[in-house]
Image (tube, rainbow, N blue to C red):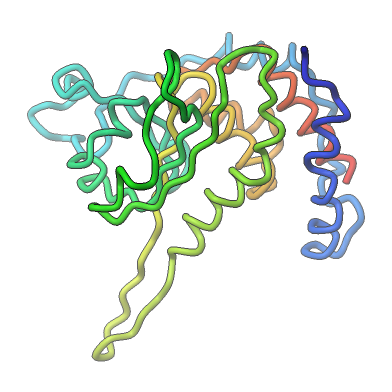
Length: 237
């Protein structure tokens, strides 16, 4: 069954109160235009991301070939926020090298098309974990995870950024999040766009353009429709 507009609306309706409290105005995002699924599809079709070096391998001998040689694939979509595939998420040495502190699995499950991982898998490297059993299908309800996923990512990036003073020296600790699914193509980019809209107050089309510029992505039509409804709901807060 297709996800209905009211499902998305009630998933994010409490943002109205939060945004009014933070900004002091009733409609802080009123400058946003109405968003449609077709508009988001046009953004994806028009995008031409440049193939670039795997993060942390820029300027090395592996260079642009690191993704193929290492079998890893991820990109930084926004400061300290990475989207990647299953292989990247399960490669603990690379997560340590990248400085990842939190992993969000947008495809948690033990059947085909899912990634069978959990918090215990990352205990030995001190990485915090959250997973959702989201199937990459146009009828899947992405919207039910909008707020919890956005909160996890936001807490990871902002909450881990603490300044500590030791012997008069300031050390700033910054959280880094990897959001992943199987290929980093549909589910995890959709979660990332929702985060940017909800927590960074970025219009959904702008958030999608940002992600498309960083990586080749294509959330399915159902996800795009729910992201469009999210954008319109936020603009009416």
